[in-house]
Image 1 (cartoon, rainbow, N blue to C red):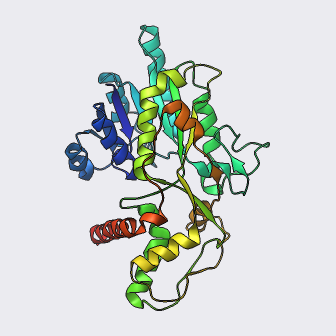
Image 2: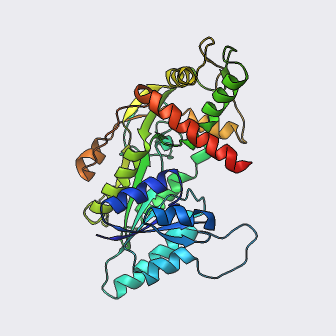
Image 3: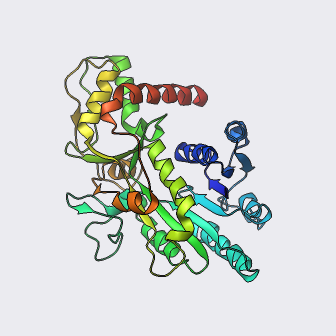
Length: 337
């Protein structure tokens, strides 16, 4: 049993990670920016820490962040970072290194740090890659999409912290299951079109040849739990490479979208995918990243972490996943109104 702080504990992956950590009898603390999420964390036996994780825009306050104070006062063993913060080196990594140095000076164990990254860093290509392949470098076979082009440098900073942190990186592929908010990009448009006219042709901005690398949210979460429980053995020395791609299936995006539409009552012709739009703003940047075609196995995660995924694929369970997404979408829409 260890004490774990999950940064982003009320989020899509963060809540599942927190739930599975509790099922494994770990003590879990979780950050949330909004007090509205406190009840959700408490109901899942997570100790809430409310407040910002990093400096907010325009803020000049130098007061310690609540999460960092909790790491210190509660003697937390491992921090899981699911914040997707572009300033993560300054706002999260460096403060943790300083705190871990203080612990080392008192002959205490180093702090553990597990960063939630993603397989999009490999960029799009038809060749098989792996978590041993360099990302975001001149010798990389492909470059990451613009949306996440900042992440390789952060990963390298994390790996360079081995003297002071037990650090590891988990890279889930495109996540599905549960409320699946990330799929609103396409599922939301399909649902609205069907509501307007279930026989009208649906067109979407996507690559008709895209093959999505996928993982269920439960399997993504279990990889983080396995990393927590193996952290000291896989990290903390110069020659370790504690980076793990985690994925369970490679499926046609065209097939997924058409099967989803049929589950919701679509009666029209096959969905027409018009290609990935260019541009350097949202939503174009997100669409470009979403259509990243990555082929990577998870052999090292299975062998080294003992990771054992349980879900077989997205399309095969679409009768379940489509309804789960729809329930989440309706709830989000109601809350927005």
